[in-house]
Image (tube, rainbow, N blue to C red):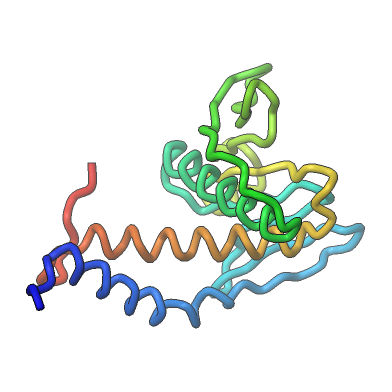
Amino acid sequence: MAPASARDLRSRQLTLIIITFNPSIMSLSIFEFGDGHFRLFRDGREVGWVEGRAVGFLGFDTEAGAYHAATVAYDALSGWLARQSREQAVPRRRLQLRVENGERQLTIGGIAIGRLFSGSDDRIANGGSRGFELTLPPRIGAALSAAQVIDQALTRHQNLRELETTNTIGAPEAVF
């Protein structure tokens, strides 16, 4: 039998580490604030909200980080929706950013599906961070389930990014 390549070892190691992180995925707390408005908390701090068909997450240091997180969220929702309807997943499409009337909108094929927030929004000013909000299509009637799908995807993504930015001796590496 040929020795395992470094890539094979990394792949096996990541699989084991992801399994280790899975217990932390379910730590999202959801609180209703009346009239169908929900706030999402992780480790005692607000990380998002659900209001009607809008699902938002905050806590990103940069607009680029919020945009990337919105992309991760959109991809997770697309896969989840395909599994729920037992259909083929929609081919991955890149979110575009356009500014209209001062609002930074997230679009696909020219259709607005969400927006980015910055510290100027009062919801985010309290946390001093940036975030995104996606508007769910009408066929997704379970906005709280969608929020949990997004939270799990963002948590997995964050855990993988932390692994990627740590070198073999455990010291953080610069990510550019």
